[in-house]
Image (cartoon, rainbow, N blue to C red):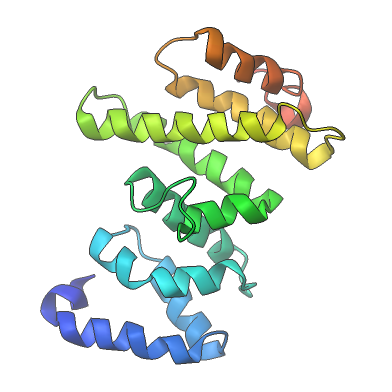
Amino acid sequence: HIFYYLDKEWVQDKIKSLEDEKGTEYWEAFMAGYLSGGEVYDNLYNLMRYHYHCGLDYNFKEKIYNERLVQHIAIGYLRNNETLNEEESLFKKILDTFKYQQIKAIISFFLMQRDYLTKDDEISTNIRENIIEFWEWLYNKYKDKQGIDENDKKILSDATKLAVFLPKIDEKNSEWLKLSSQHVGVDFNSSFF
């Protein structure tokens, strides 16, 4: 990010040139370095979209980078750079492929945001609404699903933790809680619930 402010054009050219290196050790080292950074900046996020897209289908040697990649895209969703239903959305791509580890990483990451979303300002309210919208999407995916397996139960169990973002329990979201609470004993979430 510091390089971006020192020489914006150089950084843009370097990120673009690495598109041809997709899947190589050089590209993986670049991604690992980038994903190791502590913050996600919107200007870099948009430059990195191609690399994020490629990373979703890539198995990094160190698994932490798979999780960090999902966290970056989840941040993009929370900041309205991604959506639940636009075709080009990387967040939608994660939801469409619905890999257990990625969905679990999203829920865990969203839960980690609870301490930062205590204000009633517009930004915090918007982020909480995006998290709730994600939970509603999960509910709609599962409400009529037959044959829920162990990973599905773990996801639904973890989803109960998202209740901390509800401003109130109403008729609509109480259905989400009912569905998820059936599996709250899975993955040791009953005490949290």
